[in-house]
Structure formats: structure tokens, C-alpha cells
Length: 480
Image (cartoon, rainbow, N blue to C red; front, side, top):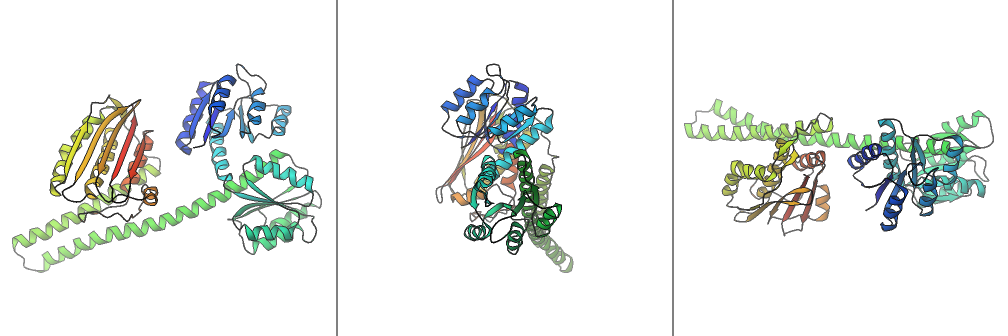
């Protein structure tokens, strides 16, 4: 797995930056406070450093000496420093650093995190440079490659169209204007007949022509235009801003699809119990029923009401988490004690209803810092699922333990299990998997999504081990 290397002698900045990267990007982070520590990390790594965020002034390496070493190792580099004069900035870009960020406040840290996120996306994006001058083409390609794009090249518009036809997933094109056979503005117009601005970014460049040339490019469908000669930094900023905008549009479209699916699922899941409540109520009101029959229908009404209440509770949980109103009330608690309480209060009785044996190995664990109610939700969801998807007369194994600086809670069942594809979808909202409850139990499709968000908020982790027809084990690890 690729990771981020932070080389920073200020523990304050290093810790804040590390925390933000882990929380927002879920990426491994290594921190070095000196040139020596950085060399040790790099030399012991298995070429798995995705990017290095480095300070120019370190106790054992002044004036940016570390940049030369890291670039020699072909590690993409972002400079994160307190100050940078024009000469230093030029030197950094001559050494093909990706970008520089000036330390200031949390906004600068947000910028670094956003930059890493965009670079992760860039590494999966194909780009095309269309330019008849080999020197200019190489210059632009070097800039794009420094930003981690997978870059193709074409000498003219006709060649560009052929490359695009064979690689329809190209997402970025930088094209010159003056070229043989077809100029860049005409090329842009032809491309826009098939690809819209929301899927493919086109940036026009030219050393000739008036300001009307930029108008011509933009009216033919270009996302942006830049006059030559330009600074590397200027082209980088234009590219990154345009790619970020396209990514945001794609994300909004994805969210809109999720919203529509969300509304459809909620409408369906609320309509069924609501219809039952209305139908059974009408039967009670319109017919002369004996007491036993009336009680039976009232039990159905209560069950349907509980189903609706569970769905609404889950929806409120998801809404509060996504809106940022999700607050944890962390205190010193004991995970083993919590699991014991939930088993006795709720799950011993539920297990008996399906004749499932609850076998436990609850070892003493140290007090740890977590929200008792929220982790109680996690325990309830995992135990409930184990019973829900286990056949009658089977076994559910529950353990608690300590490993290094984590307390561990594990639930294993002998149910239907899941393949890798279903495991990947498990924590998505409203996902319906092929695995079905064995006793006709209902599911909102939100429980595991809530579990994952609660665990993430505690900086813990949840792991799945499962095979079809061989059962499933969920393991939760929380920091002590």
C-alpha cells in the first residue's frame, strides 16, 4: 500500500498534517523530523512512498538539500515551508517538485490534503498533449507527468483524434493552436461533438494571436486557455483547478444518483409497514373481531411501527453523521464489560429464539476512551447480523482481547458468508446483498454503514474475514 512521507521538524505541524491525511484520505503516513530519519525511512521502504511532503529547513539539512536527495529517489515531492523567495521557487520547479505550500494556518494544511487527494486521482487519469513543436510538447508533458498524469502525445490534430478514439477514457487534453492539417480550436470543436466539458478538460495554448484567440478556443468548447510563454506553476494551477472542478461535478452527479436511490429505498421501506398498519387498523375498525384476533393484528401493527421507527432512527444517524453534527461523548469505558451487558440484555433471548448458541471468550481488557452508546450500537449491529444471517441450531462465537495498543471485539458466525465483491459493498448505504436473513428478519441497509462511520470517528478499524458458505468474522479494533 502506498503511503505519504512527511519530513518536518515541527511536531505541531507534522501531527496536524498527519491526522488530517489519515482522517480524510485513509492513507498510511510516516513522519521524519530530520534528514537522517527521512533517509532511514526511504531506504527501508519497499518503493511504496506515493508522495513526500518536506520542509526545506531541517536541523541536519539546510536550504533545501533534502529535495535533491528525494528527487534522486524519484519520489514525487511537495515543499511545505515557512517561506520561499522567487529564486528558491524557481529552483524547486526546476527540480520538478509538484508544488509548494506556505505554512500559515489550517487552510494551508487543507490545501496539502486536497493536493494529495487530487494527485491520487491524477495517477489514474490519462492526458494528451497535442503540439507540433517537439521541444514545447516535451515541456508540457514533463509538467503533466510531474503532476502524476499518464501522458500521451500527438504532433497534430488528426493524430490526436486517432489517439482519443483508441483511448476514450482520456480526461485531459492540452492543445496548441498553430498546427498542420487542423488548428487547436477546430480540434476542440470536433472533440466537443462527442465529449462534453464535464467529462473531458481541454486547455488551449498558443504563442500567437490576439486575445480573440482565447475567445475562439472557449467558444469552441475549451475549458481554459493560456498564452505562451507561461510559468510551469501557472499551467499547473490551471490544470489542477479545472480537474478539481470536473471531479466535483462528477461527485455531485454521483451524490444525485445516491439521493434518488435513497429516496426510492426509503419510500419502499416505509410504504410496506405503513400499508400494514393502515390495513390491519381498518380490519379492526370495520369488523367485529374476537379479542385474540384483535390482539394478533395489534401485534402486527406494533411490529410494523417498530420497523418504521428503526428505519427512521438509522436515517437520523446517517443524516447527523453526514452533516457533521455527529458528536462523540468519549469517556473511559471497558469494552469487555460493554459486550457482556449487551449479550445479557438483548442477545441471549434473541439467540434462544433461533436456538443459536452464543459461545464467548471475553478476556479482561484495559479501560479505553470511547463513546459507550455509539460503540454499543456497533456491538448491537454486529451481534444482530450474526444472529440474523446464521441458520437455526448453529453457533456464534464472540471474543474480546487486547493487541498492542488496541482493544479488540470479534464476532464469528457459521452463516452464508460473502464473496469479495459483496464485502466491498458491505459498508455502502442502502446496499442489498445476496446474503439473506435466515429467519425472515428485516434490514434497513444502513446498519453496517453506520458501524463503519462510528468506528472511523473513533480512529479504529473494522475488518472482515468471510468466504461463501463458510461464515463471516467481523473484528473491531479501538485505540486504548
